[in-house]
Length: 439
Image 1 (cartoon, rainbow, N blue to C red):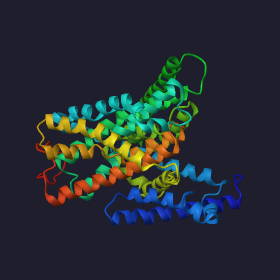
Image 2: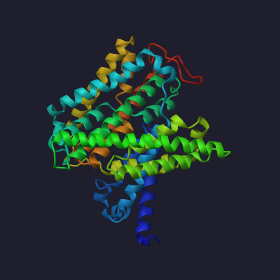
Image 3: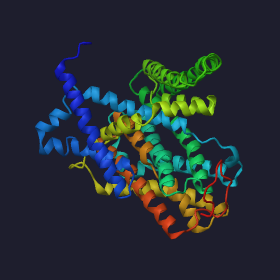
């Protein structure tokens, strides 16, 4: 049926089942030892990939990752990435009372601008600058590579931070709500910058014209497509939602509308060579801003746990599949980049917190929170690697650093919770509900 052979379907289902069960098992084991589940899911992909299973048991590796069926597995993994970005948009924290706190605007600037500017300027002086990929050629490619490093240095993992705070019963504290809200705005800016970096990289494939002019053309085209998408959303998403709202008794229409907008938008973005991973984030934001609370809750209920329990683990397993600790991996390179990223992101954040009246320990809490890369770090790494902007050793360094920083943040805030140390000096108003305010 549909031209698919029985053998290809068997291989797809066998690979999906094996990878999903392994990711689930190692993810549960990771949580048992108090580290984020995503670390176990990436470890599953690494264990089943060419570095481990492919070396120890090639026949089994060929069954799980057959050459004919591997592309279908990657399609399912990309769906996992899309659903993750959609979830990020749906759970975007609107500022409301938080925006009126003194730390809000200063933290957005302090956690974004210094790290980006310093990273872009200092990249050529470090060893990892020699690990640009084949696509990072010429002035446009070099600029794209430096932007990728800047984004990787400063991006923050909102989903994992939120889970860490929830697991530790800190999610309703003023500190947690301030950090999550600032990080949401902070990451939106960086996703936009990542799209600029990818547009610059796309310009390297065209030889005609001046390099800067070509880069400007691709950036302009990306912005134009995004603006057109926003205009279409205003003309389509909002009015259609209003029609369904008037003519139907329930809210079941909201999920098909969101998913339809996601896949149509992704198809149009791919058609016009714009990075499609930003479409689900954009659609999630529209749903967060334009749907009523009960409609958005219906979307979340309709999605349920399937995307997070099936598709997302497959994406993280795919990330782990490409990790390699072979001869090309350098622990010194990992240590160098970790110090580079922690210092360039942590020191400005610490300084901003101190300048707004936070004590040394409380300022350190902010520095640790905004130095956690987690899932967005892996998205940046996998996107840059897929586009040929970084090589395999630096890809592995990025992924390991993203996982390590997530684990380090979890350990830090668990210790803060156990020691009943203060999270911040001044309490900011919570968004809603009641919760512990003493920390």
